View 1 (cartoon, one colour):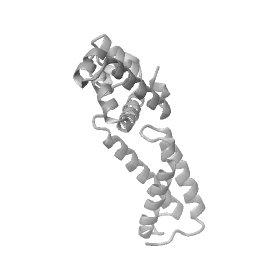
View 2: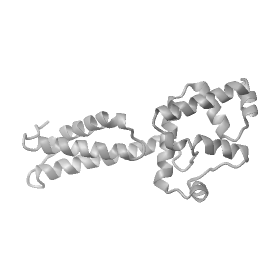
View 3: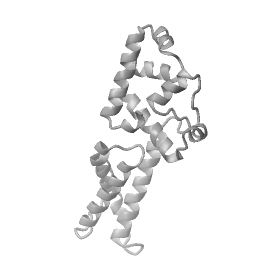
View 4: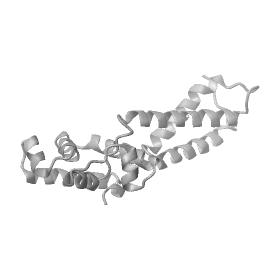
Length: 188
């Protein structure tokens, strides 16, 4: 593995910070991911530096291409983590409203028609909500999924074998967790 020249290192550091900052502004990444993203981008550059050929490009161009390519692969990986990027659930309130009116937004196209949102915002919403749901305790997650599937509070309580009051507490807990994770935008 080759060593990165000292005159390229400051440029690489600025580039990595800039690209990582750009990634966390997009869907699927959070501000707390910035340090990990910077490390990943820098480590990939170190791994690939040995393949640098000065006759094909300048060191800065090579670094730029490698870092941006790795960033695009990280984005692809984030989207691949989303089980079904075309199923948009919406906010907790939208799920409750949909369940109460026996109407459920099911696809991006339906979601766009219903809300007038753009696709990237919808996919970002899906990824952020799925990440947040993974952090919830299994019991709360189950209540949220049941409620989001169109069941009433009473039906969720019956299905989960808990009281309606416990269902409401679980939904409140999920809302608080979304707020804690900075997803206030999805809690209208």
